[in-house]
Image (cartoon, rainbow, N blue to C red):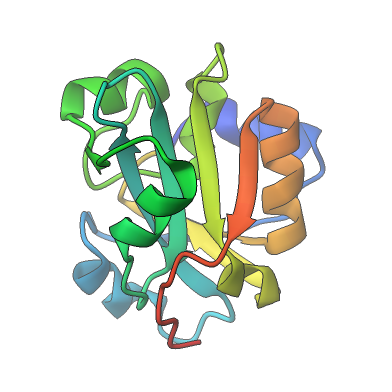
Length: 168
């Protein structure tokens, strides 16, 4: 299996069932969509951001066909302007590279620095999918197991209406 072996060990330890889908590198949603047909899951896009001071980082999780309205989250957080975090920051906090961003990277956030915001449309999904910290595979898990994973990882998370114009 492609991906982080520690992640698979952890999923098994937590008794999180997953469906593994191997595919060629899929660094963008547009590329990944061609490998997701026929799978009963809401496929997600994951955006890694930072506040204007660079002292707080956020993982934004949305349905893959959603439009993320950054201004809505900025107004809610009152942290000033949010911007995309750099590759260096992505690797520093989640040990991930661009095109492989996933909540599963939170196993590397030992200081619990990254705050997770999940679009409320995903809470209506029975199953969701993410890369297993590498973009040559996808894992499908239940939404409730995603929440269990976040709790185990010690990640602060919140389910919000991110103004995502979801196409579920």
